[in-house]
Image (cartoon, rainbow, N blue to C red; front, top):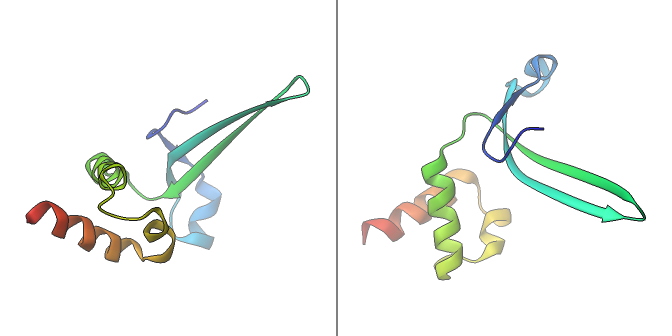
Length: 87
């Protein structure tokens, strides 16, 4: 079972989505009626741990809202985080 930030390769996805390399963004565990369910959230490409930690810190400090993650493009979110750390 891969852990958070580890990479997984799915060679059969490269022609359809442009990458075969994914990293584990989040792991969720559910236990119900004697059954365990594990859900891995994957994101395509290479991981930048510094970006992920900077994003978590910005969320924790209240510098960005959690809806920004869903509403902004990745580059817009990066620009917003970079501006926070440059001031």
